[in-house]
Length: 532
Picture: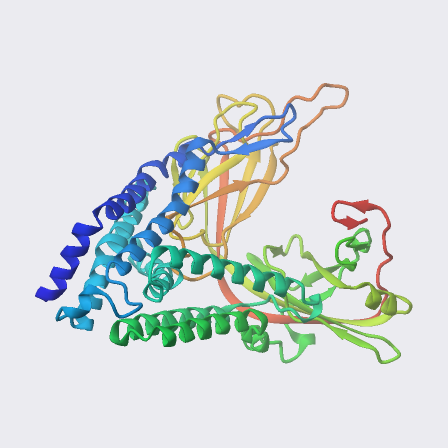
């Protein structure tokens, strides 16, 4: 223990400027980040509100500080390791009776004191400032700490022990960033129908396992034997495994397990069918890729009262009468919510122009599989809108806009450790000046979805408080017949907000076969990135 403390105190004396700089960045984040909670307003800069600027200087500074925190860790960990560099055999510390387990323990103690401890303390302070009790989110704090470890700290540590100096480390880090960009570009260049973008449960687990085990092995090899060549082999293997996961996602073979199909589609509670929405049946060609994209409107019947269905991914296959076939991999389709009142959704299918021309000539048989999460009501309640902070149980802390005709129509909210659970919000719009006594009679309703069904206690983040706006529908300028524009509808203090939270009930796969399906006609008018 005496040797561990001696090495630790030596590092503290030598690296006090880097320590102070890192602590100063974390302290600045704690002081400045909460200011964005009160200044996050939508400021209309155009006469009719077409141009908007989110937040102000406080938000910009806070965003910069969020990026500077891992940068300060990168510098601090690199300087700590390179103070007794492990590459080569001419270091002064080799002549001293250092035992490598104690040597490594001293470095880990340094990281615990000057990276982990300030980070956890900062997250607890931010939670308290945001109106959340830190002790109620201990499981989320530790989960996020694990994410920070395998995403940031361990890779920083592993690359540092394998390089002789900070300059070489910086070059290696830039090379890794270029490699990641190259893998992303290579994956995006693959044909649409063979790439997978469905669930990522096993791939996320394997990514965490590969990075954690690979980086831990590199650190142990260097401190135990200083075999730099072996360490670089481990770095290469870890990088290769990560690249392989990008191109060969194992979740593509497990979608049937995550979203099991019903034994009998005819007797299944949820029924999928083609919706009669002719306006959506148009095809558009991308001038960049030459691919043709078209929407397929679908209807989900049998949704229970008080439930919602969230599409997560879809897969399509086409079979022509002559025997030609085409099939896609699972494609992500999340961010939509289907309710009993509006049971319509649209999936967008993309194919090469040559395939489109081949299947367009005659009706085909189209088969669609839709992976969905069914969620049921967990809690529901009503609260009056306030211009100061008010708490929504199970969701977070929110703040309404100022009561002026031209104020923002957003409700600014924050949640602890992650986005809130999936929540449906209904509010009441007001036109003109806010009345002294708010009433909801005769007002136009607006609705919004926020949050998700993710059940993890936290999401990876440098901050522990997540901001999210609630943007209600029906935000539009109103014009009475024969009158001038009176201003956009807005939210008034005292109007009623209804919040309904949902919990995941089941995951399943809905299937539908559509015989004699005619691919939609191709539009020729160019609009944006697509010919429409």
